[in-house]
Length: 343
Image (cartoon, rainbow, N blue to C red; front, top):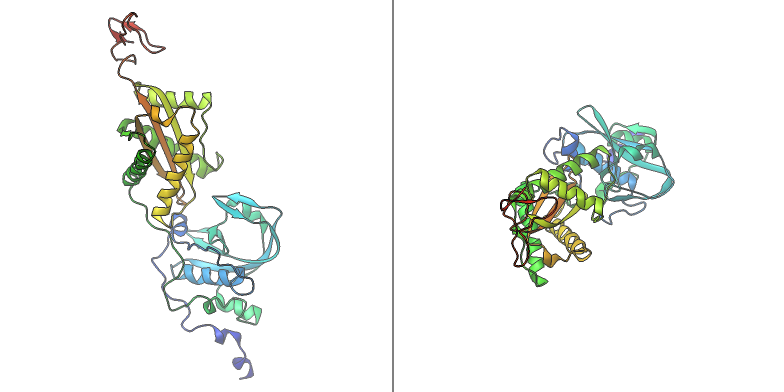
């Protein structure tokens, strides 16, 4: 009787576990339900312990077998990964491990983010709790994990959760329209949509997503304009049978996912394009056609490529030779004019 009165488990809401959403069956689905924690951390009020307990409750409600873990975190310096800053820290810490389709996935509760494999070495497990009851019993107090004093357990989750992005073609069209609206505000002519160029941009984004997701490339934005990059773009276009240009510009952007607000996401893309164009050696006014290609990796990171050109109407492979008074008919290098056609 005495033990029952002071059993801290009795202070856990009853019923505790409940349905919080659809069942999750793989890592990609898991990444797309994690809530967004922004400025929510408060020491001894809603810190790593309460956040771990909340995340365990939230994921169990999605059908995910989740454990609360206590141990040490020994990260000697700040590390940026996947668009998020993992701050340095040493000492006691709590986190969760989700088991999905036979894979154990470590989640940092203060960010509500899957921890990159390269950072898992900093999380040193001391003890694992199967559920909130194990954790509270071991600590002999509910106060370490009582997240429900901060978040109403009976109300909808108050944190943003990822939104579903539209089909890639719709997403590409939305970004393209925003780019043109921005150009018009700057007094520039709207770019003409070029489906052939968009397919090249789409293939480049898919390749970029595959490389980044596999760890074969570095994270970040690529707005390089050196000669090698220009040559690569020209080769990509020409391999696709696109020769009708004399100027080409490629801009790429990696946006960490998943996306929580579609309008904010579009604005991020627009700001990036505007910044990139302002730094180009070739002025944006010289470009007249463009295509945008988008790819999304399993973790919801979005890779966007915009390829823009200045179209020419003669002098390219298979086209008529250019004619100008006082000059012989000519073609752009490496083509030569042969019977009025560039070959």
